[in-house]
Image (cartoon, rainbow, N blue to C red):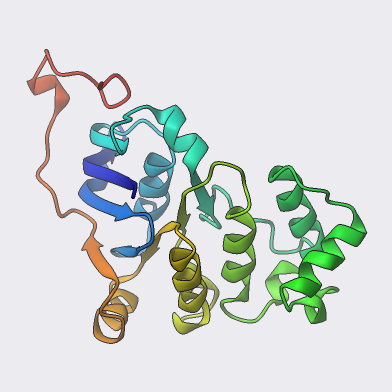
Length: 228
């Protein structure tokens, strides 16, 4: 079993705190929801977890490895707004082809057709990403991201923005967790309340649930990326 963890992670610019100190952990084979008001904090937490952003403070790790490189190799950011979301006007076939290529798999038209057919999605062959039914966009992108070599964790960027019914994508999250992936989804407070009520096996953690720590207060402390 493996764990991806953020402990007291926060992000700020020169004017204000953008992500309040937040602690959340997800193990392989489980689903966790991190929630809060809509805004940049969803993408900032995802970027931090994925090793694409050095936060202002806190610790990030996969098991005993605190390096950003480990998270970059093992964490896939799925449809995170402004980060990994595909352009809405792209054809579904283009997105599938690009994701197959990223996974090191054959990505010609016949391979795209085969993937869509084998995943029960061939009826959407001629659609654009923006035309997919609610939840299917997340299903497609999460399933494709799980094919990338070395990926063990999937961070879903506020999937409700493509349809407020969490049931439209939660079943896929459950399937991926059952396959051994750790799945963390960011969501609004309202959707988190729904999840807490109807899906008792999914743990939830609010943004801003940790104590602020300024590394400048401890000059001998190592940074997140330098931690052993």
